[in-house]
Amino acid sequence: MRFVYILRCKDNSLYTGITNNLEKRIFDHNNSKIWAKYTKSRRPVKLVWKKKVSDKNTASKLEYKIKRMWKQKKEELIFLK
Image (cartoon, rainbow, N blue to C red; front, side):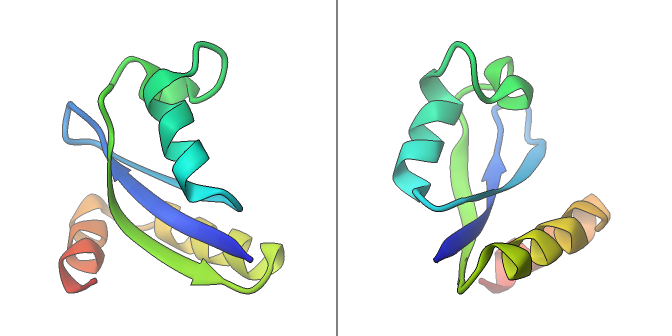
């Protein structure tokens, strides 16, 4: 099982990622010194959207699709939860 997720950063930008441990990954985004390069300078981050998927391949395809969206479309996705 994997999660595709969207975080809202302090500067209001959105970060999309994949993980198999959502709580740990969000913790890493907010605290890690070596991981989470994009979010490191944009802390704190907040989880605003997530979707559980069955396998890594499906998760990767969904992440790719979301990352290609304009910000407005991502905001609509978040709003519709």
